[in-house]
Amino acid sequence: MRAGVGGLVPMSPTEAMFVLFESPSHPMHVATLTLFDPPRGTAPGAHAAEMVERLRAHAEVAELFRKRPSRPLHGYPWWRLEKHIELGYHVRHTAVPGEGTMAELLSLVSQMHSMPLDPQHPMWEMHVIEGLTDGRTAVYTKFHLSLTDGASGMRLLHRALTVEPDLHDCPAPWSPSVAAPTRHPSRNPRGVLRSGLVTTRELTATVPTLIRAGYHGLTEEHLTLPLQSPPTIFNAPTGRARKVAARSWPLNQLRRLAACTGAPLDVVVLTMCAGALRAYLLEQYALPEAPLTAMLPVPLDLGESPSIGPGGNRGIGAMVVSLATDEDDPLTRLARIADSVAHTSGIVAALSRTQFQLVSALMLSPIMLDPVRRVLDDIPPPFNVMISYTPGPTRPRYWNGAHLDAVYPIPTLARGQALSITLTSRSGQLHVTVVGDRTAVPHLHRIIGHLDTALTDLDTAARTASP
Image (cartoon, rainbow, N blue to C red; front, top):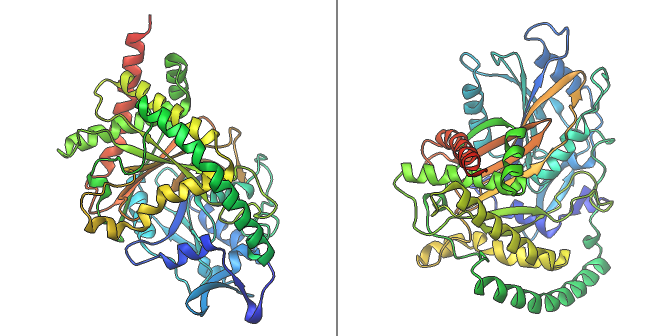
């Protein structure tokens, strides 16, 4: 990225959107909570301080981590590239209060995730946390969405790791060898014109495809559309305070269920989430008669594009599916979710990347117009909850001898969306994070318990139905 006058560079429209749409009640950041087992031979309680010292020693910082927003021209944000980065500010050392339980760690992380990033600095932080009773070291890393989306941020963190347990010269996530400079072709005027012409052609070609697919899906009652979702407590106005809950499950348990039922693994995961949400809403006397819907984020670029690099905001597409929460039987619910996912995926497969991006923007636009939607009470939410599942690496990973034991992605909450569930798998474990508005979603930790019950119920039903 080449700096302009005064060290300023223009933001892309997506980057600017996340800066301009941020408010005290809607901080636009994502985070990742990672847990490390200290290297062999490390003195008890010493690993966190050693990690902080090693991280701060990586003084060479890639461009992505040197950008902070500036608004010099008619209120439109530009990037200012900072020459000096104060790693003592960005890399922080803290401790879990109390006895150091996992619940106390998640309470601390909830407080951290409720606080917006300071735009007077490059908008990222890394908190190295000591004091867990099990001896592990926690690292909470937070990025503003204008810098990177959640999937790309996790990719940056993983690129700093190694499969070699005895390697002790690992880079930091902000090292130039990990976070390559970002470039955006649409910032070139010719690129903007060319992109506009392509988009117009793609949009024209999208219409007949959607009409055919939509007619087929609606006539067979398999297609779930935005604005068909029932009102729920998950679609309430949100404040700044967040609550984070997390837990892990053996991945083999879900794989056995997938093999037993013939359903894809991601459908089993969705069914587990649907059962938990149904149980939670029943407990709150708030389960609607119509089935809940979920928005599933789909990365628009699954690889490492040379125009974006391993970091940067790649953007996401979106597909909306039914969670069949009006169904009591776990196996019937699984079958209905599988049908919904299959039909929606078929429509997505018929679209080009640009067409899918356009359709996703239209699908998500009601979120941006949430204040207007709330004035018009008869307009339903575009979806009820966001559920994101991203498979991770299967081999163990290390950072300077410390074994990465768990990864919990922590998303932002969109306007009018008070709950989000994020799942990732790695090394035989499924790591689940539930994030909610502290007021709108009371007793959020109970959803974690309902996830376990839903998985058990589905397993029991599958075993009973097996010949």
